Structures are given as C-alpha cells and as structure tokens.
Amino acid sequence: METNQKLLLDEFQMITEEIVWRNEQGDESQTVWSPAGSIWTVSKCLGCEKLTFKHILRALPTKEYDQIFYFPRKPVREIPKWISKLPKIYLEVLHEVYASVQEGLHILALSGIRTLLDIFIVSKIGDIGSFKQKIEKLINTGIITFSKATVLEAAIEAGNASSHRGYKPDKETVFQILDIVENLLQSEIVDRPVSQIKQKTPTRKK
Image (tube, rainbow, N blue to C red; front, side, top):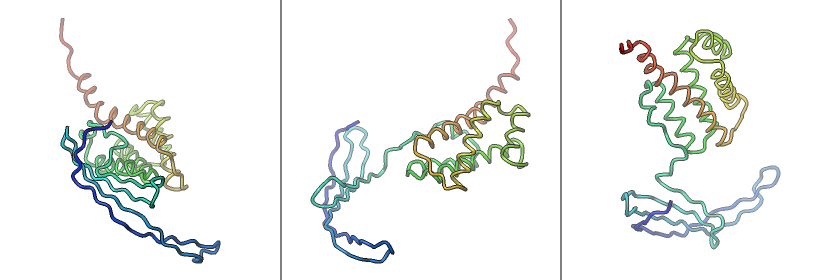
C-alpha cells in the first residue's frame, strides 16, 4: 500500500563496475568497465513517521536491471505473537529461522526447522533411537496424534534432505513446513497447558 512520504535525502553517485568474461577453462579472456549509478534515498512516512532507507544500483542508462534494497525490509512472513510464550531454547532457534526466511535463505531455514523439531521431540521423550522411532513413541504415549505425526514426518524429511542432500526448497514449501511447525509448537506447548488446566478444574455444580 502506497503512503505519503517526505523525501529527506536523495543522492546519486557514479560508479564503474568491472565485467570479466571467462572461457570454459575459467581463464580470464576479456575485461570491460561498465558505468553504473548508485542512488540513495531516505524518506519519512507522513502518517506513522517511520523512516525508510532505499538504495538503487543501476546499470546506466537503463532502469531495466535495477537492483533495489530497502532497510528495514518489509517482512515476508509475520511472526506469531504467541511465540513469546515458548521456552527460551525454542525462541533462540526460531529467531534464526525467521531471519533466514526473511533473507530467502531457505536451506538454512529448513535446517533450523529440523533443529526445532529435534528439540521438541527430545523434550517430550528423550534422545532415543531414530526420528522414526521417536515419532512412533510420541504416538504411542499419546503426545501427538497419528495425523499430526504424518505431517511432522514430512517436515523432518524435508529438513533432512536440506541438511544432507542439497535440497533447496522454494518459498512456498518453506512456508508450508513452517505452518506445520508453528501449529505443533502452539498446540503442544502453548495451548496444551491451558487445556490441561481446564480439565483439572472442577466444574461448577448446578
């Protein structure tokens, strides 16, 4: 959504970029210097008064291949407010997962998600056996349902593929897996204690 902005800074700098062509053997074959421009702007929203920094790298004279960088960047995914209720060990990893997602580092994000799942499982049943054995125990002890275990296995397998087999997922896949993990953490760590309190609380006599 566009907002009314007050331009506080607008600077242009000429720069030159070295472009190197190499042959099939990787040897340098030709070098040219290409003129380029660096545009710096700082603006202030006239509504919320938020400052925004914008940097444009432009290969002169066309705008077709502009590279645009914003700070602070708009979040690509909202962080749930309920995560503040999680134990510190989850928050530390989640912080890095969301940071990786924001920067488009999907392999790192999946590796972090796999670590989150490992922390969750170990906290519930201890560090015993393979992931498959751990999930079976989670089901047998009634900690998670079979249907939840199925989606959990899918998330773990994606994390394993990213860590060990060079799998690079797209943003949609990472978001789907993060949905699974967020749902698990919210339902099993944040919401479950509330439901347990309700179960233990005596009902009001009529």
